[in-house]
Length: 157
Image (cartoon, rainbow, N blue to C red; front, side, top):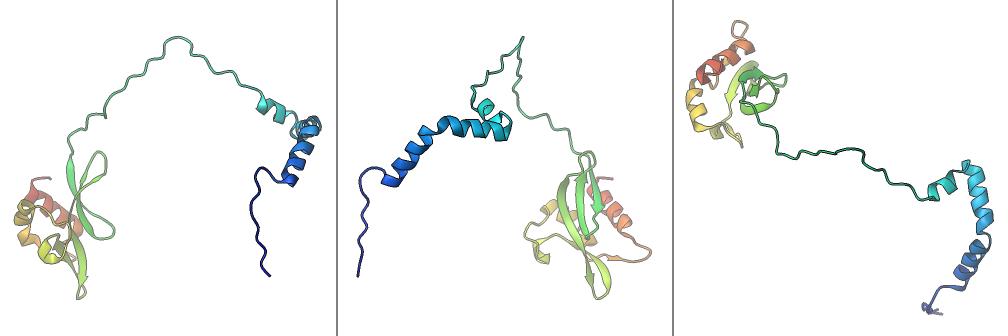
């Protein structure tokens, strides 16, 4: 057996009855809502007065603030990334390479296409730091010394 249900024109009979019941008891519903909310229901339905400006309102629109010249420095991060960062803001300017563990030794790997980096350093930076690629960190040659040497070759420190 198949029942075909088609939509009638206009609202359903039950909806009309409920709307009529609500409209007939509107004052009682509002009174109960105010009693429960401590008068908040009627207060929320009242039109609010718009705030008016007093005195002059001056809005100066403009572009972004001027950016000061970056003061770069070389840093080796906790996770072994060698970066140049701005001393004032702390923002990373360039990723220079990584310190990787190869065969139990800590080795500096320059960020070049030959070393498998998707975003390599500029060719001028790569040429200046080519002899640093593959440098081993030891007890006598620390991360700070590596950062100092890279900075010296790039003319930063």
